[in-house]
Amino acid sequence: MKLAFLYNVRHQYPDPDRPETQVEADFDDPETIAAMTAHLRECGFDVIPIEADPDAYIKLYENRDSIDLVFNYSIGIYGQARYAQVPAMLEMLRLPYTGSGPLTQALILDKARMQQVLSACNVPVLCSQVFETGDEPLQSGLAFPLIVKPVAQGSSAGITSDSVVRDEAALYRQVGRVMATFGEPALVQPFLDGREFSIPMMGNPPEIFPIIEPDFSRLPEGYARIDSLEVKWIFEEQAESHHLICPAPVAPGLQERLEQTVRAAWKALGICDWCRIDLRCDMAGTPYVIDVNSPPGMIPPEGSMTSYFPMSARAAGIDYQGLLKRLIETAMDRLSAR
Image: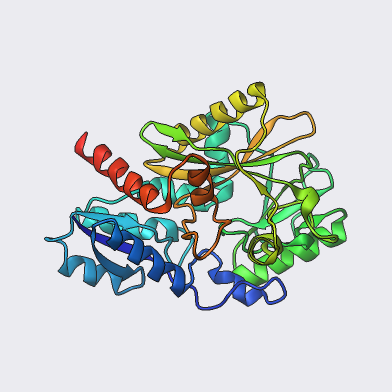
């Protein structure tokens, strides 16, 4: 099988103290892309690596008659709907690909729009306010503590320990930082201090992989109890033992509720093949969808032992190349069933 592998390359490692480096947090290091390409070739695929930059269309067009499948690991580089760029391009070229389509990808990137869709489908999400100018008054229904995020970023970009705010001065300061760094609105939501879970899914309909839970009690002093940039890009990679538990110890009742929630989110958004859904619970134990990762991170174990999807797969007895093969088979089965 000739497989086109589409990706985006990071040129600066994300640094919480240098906001300009966070713009490419969603991308992958060159070493990760090289390792993923090598693993795909070891799986037996004839791989054409293509960086998802403006030249990608030309390379796809030139190879369109020989490509059997596109492994779309890209997230686009420009604009408000960048997650949708490559899927839309592939549909125009009539090339089959892994993962969700352009409409789903556009919704997933814009957290505010995604939550509107999920709410309309009775999937539990938090109330929120989008700050477009940074001067809007805080809605009366939102009470401190709150969390401030970019409305359309992934990989914890723009989310640091300062993102949890407890008064209006800190709120507007953090909203201003987000808008200045990313040139996009800021999303403000209640900060929940309950348990957090990350749930990988693969298949059509999806199989739920072992649940991941961060144990925030293991974080260093001064770190907010969130999956922040400091946690994801510094603590997880430098600590002798990380804070992630997989499989998470979840009581049957809560597990059923989590699984019902992520399946409902998958259906509401029209997800295909795979994703990872992050949820956070309130103190009563009610889970809310806070983010959907599509495509989810897939760093090979030689690059990181804390990349969530491969970690969960290992807990299920699936090695890295087995996971890659399963994804390709999942997409091919879906496409052949059309």
